[in-house]
Image 1 (cartoon, chains in turn cyan, orange):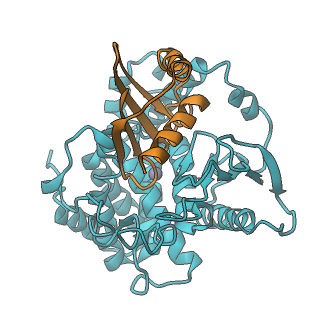
Image 2 (cartoon, rainbow over the protein chains, first blue to last red):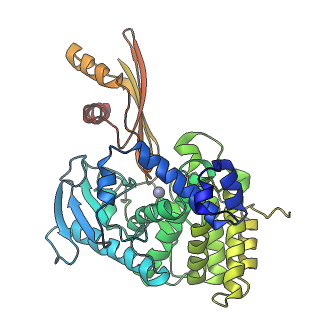
Image 3 (tube, rainbow over the protein chains, first blue to last red):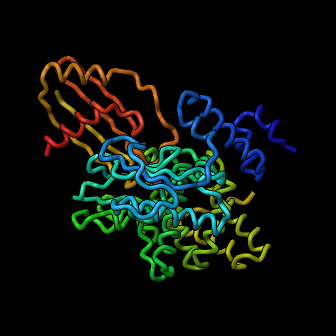
Length: 338
Length: 89
Ligand SMILES: [Zn+2]
C-alpha cells in the first residue's frame, strides 16, 4: 500500500498516524525523513564524512586528557592489548560487552546495525560529572571525586549511553516529553539488563539500580536511579512510579530523566514475572517498532502487541502479553479499547 | 554583576544552580559580554544526557540570558562558569 518512495511526500503527522497503526514502511520512512532532514541541516558537519567510511563496529578509546574535547589522543583500538590506563581498559571492555550482548542476542551489527565504530572518549574535562552520547560517539568524565566517580567504568552507564545510539538508529525517539522519557527508559532498561548479565546476577540477586558505582560515599544516595523503586535512589530522585505523579514541568526537557521512572517500573514488574530474557526480547522488538514521537500509551500498546506476536511464535512465556498489560496497568497505563 | 548559573539534565538528571555576585575587571567583563551576545550557531539535536548550561547575568546596565548545550558551550564561557562556581565555594 504505502511504498517507501511514496511516503516521502506524505506529511510527517500522517506518517506518524500510519506508523502508529503498525505500518512499518511508514515508520521507517518517518524516521529516515527526520534523519535526512537533519543530515541536510548539518551538511558542513564533518560527522557526515565519517559516515561514508566503511566500518566494522571496532572500538576506539580516546583520552581527552582532561580537556573538553573529543578524539584528542587514541590510546587503544580494537584488538590492541591492555594499556596502562585502567579507565581506558574498562571503557574498552564494557563497550565490548555491550556490543557482544546486542550482537549475540539480537544479531545487531554494532550501534546502527551497519557496523558503526564504537568511539569512546574518557577523561573528558576536569572533574566532569557526566557521560553523554552526541549522535556519533560516547564521552565520559572522571567525576569530581566528591559526589561522582569514573563514569566510563560503570557497565550500566556505558550500556545506557550506547543504547542512546541504538535508539537513535532504531526509533529516533525525540528527546523531550514522553518520547524523550521513553528514550531514557530504553537506555535504563538495557543498562540494567546488561549490568545483570555482566555481573552474572539473577533478577532476585540484582539491585535494579542505575549508576550505583558512579556515586561516592558522600553522595546523598545509593545510585542515580532505581528501576525497582523509582524516586528512592537519592535525595534528588524525583522519579514517579505511577502516572498519578507524572511530572508536568519544563525542566529536564519536560522530565525525560524523571518520567522514565513510570515505564521503568513497568519493566521491573514485567521482568519479575517473566524473567529478564523474555522482557529483553519484547522490549527490543518494541523499540524497533516505535517512532520519533511515540508516547507512553503507544509504547504500552506496541509492547503488548509484540509480546502477542512472540507468543504465537512460541519464543516466550505464553502469558507474557497479559503480564505486560498488567504491569503497565499497575503504573497507571491502561489500553484504550477501540 | 549578578549571576545565576544553572546546569541541568546530564546522565544523572540532577540540576545545580549557583546564584551570586561576581566582581570582574572591565576587560574580562567586555570579553564575556562579547561571547554571550554571539548567536549560537551549532546545536546538536542528537545529544543525549548532555548538560544544558543556562546563564543569567544582570546589573550595571546589562541584562542577558543565554543557554548552551554541551556541543556549543564556548570554551571561554566554560572557563568563566568553572571559575565562578569555584569562587562561590
Ligand atoms: Zn540517558
